[in-house]
Amino acid sequence: MDWVLALFAGFISGIALVVGAAVAWFVSVPKHVVAAVMAFGSGVLISALAFDLVDEAADNGGFWPTMFGFLAGAVVYVGINITLDWRNARNRNSRSSSKGTGTGIVVGALLDGIPETAVLGLSLVGGGQLSIPILAAVVISNLPEGLSATADLKREGRSPAYVFGLWAITTAACALSALGGFALLQGAPVQATSFVSAIAAGAILAMICDTMIPEAFDDAKSFTGLVAVIGFFAAFGIHQLG
Image 1 (cartoon, rainbow, N blue to C red):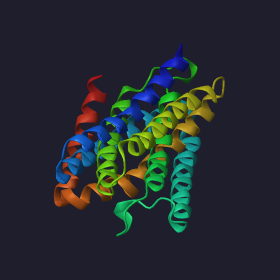
Image 2: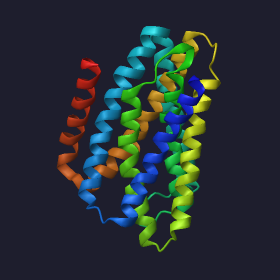
Image 3: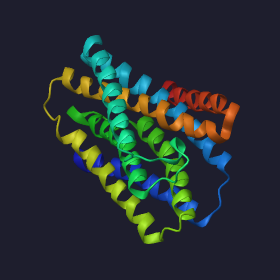
Image 4: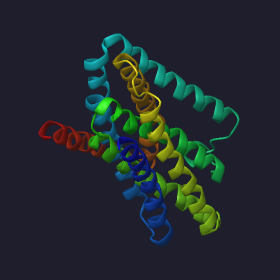
């Protein structure tokens, strides 16, 4: 029942946003703590995409499909970002002095989360095993995102039903994204799955540079790089020992 595992992995990834939201709603978490977790998650994600996505995709599908996919993922992600920012549809607090709208926050979370969770489903294609490093990295990165965005929504005076309803929608989308990553490529050639995995990796790296590291640096400042390196070190250690 690999499709159930894919759906569950996507749900776990999305529920991390809800957990972060719950913490922010009931507990006042210092901004520098949120920033440190986000910087750590950035390092973990970079390690996971380098060694569990790009390296594996190149080994299985070859160099050129992987490289073209990697670049394509970054171009598509950045292109969508530019379009949404031009239409002011993403409106995240880190990008302007105005407060982020609920819709903009969810659009941003979806844009960040879909490539991450699709990869979890892709890892199960062809009888593969769920990528635990990728799952752990996504959970670690989603916690501070839920924290930060919910704190902003709470300050705006949004109701609990509104806030947690938004995150419930995002969680459902993450679960469906993981299921889609698994279901759509069943029986596909290994070059195709490697290409799609590389697309997701490129999008994730662009997201880290566009969203996570800048938001972490806003509060962690000069410690951002060190904490990110520690996250990379931890994930790489798990990869080597596991």
